[in-house]
Length: 216
View 1 (cartoon, helix red, strand yellow):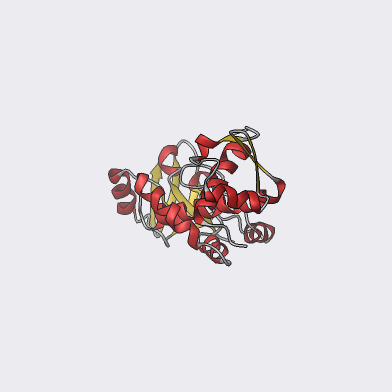
View 2 (tube, one colour):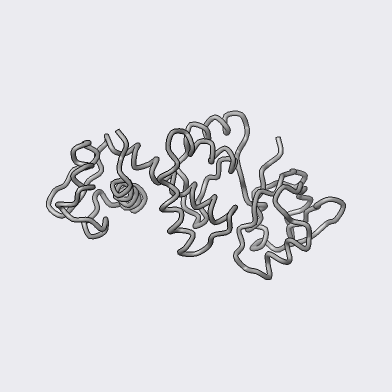
């Protein structure tokens, strides 16, 4: 049975509070809901949650749906913020809207398109899907920061995770553009890499904002 959009939002918040925040339940106020809210009753009828007083508990039956809801939201953030360049609160709002469309395998297709990212733009983990496990089993580790490469490794530039206009212009001036091939030659004292026939050096902070797909 498909969960309504509002119920998905409750599951998402509940997962973050209990699974990532370390609490065993969430207060109704933290979930932006009330005892008589339709979406809360919906989740209770599906046995996904249990309500005791003002506290809401995530039941084992609802864990996977909650986990996948968080996964869809964070994949949507990656697409909108990194690829489509929607930043800040606007990007998060659009991700909230877009995540509800990522059902029926669309999330798997998006994850594969993004090469199985492990974190959202805010650094929070993206719960892996079956496609991620299969990719790792075959040696496809997904998109990583330039700092994760070893000297001699090659990668295709996936995206630039900087919102700083000057940094972006600097990287673009180097030819550091999505789709270009990059070879890391040194990691110390600076990250030195080649793009085409040119060689460049950047500090660690800037290297962390260049994301590449490792070549197999």
